[in-house]
Length: 109
Image (cartoon, rainbow, N blue to C red):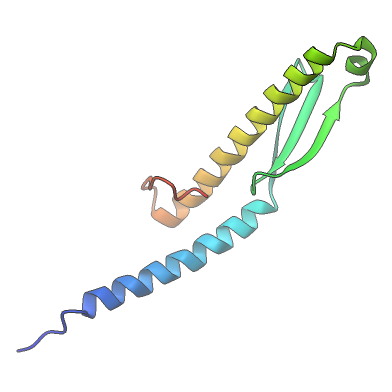
């Protein structure tokens, strides 16, 4: 009896290709979703897409009146970093459906 030694390899390649296609669909779908985070009690809010792109920055008019440039910069950094963290977490959660809950390093994006 001779078994094809590459039979399992062929099956694995097909599974990997299907997984890659599904991952592309998940990434495209997640790119349309948005998360947002605020800093300074809502004085600055940043909205980010699942593709890690900043979609919108909202600044309370009171912050602009204070003319405290350093504070505004700090709030922007804090809100942006938090929004990006939320987007990354969202993508990781989306990818769990693809991997059956198994965390695979580097697969979230």
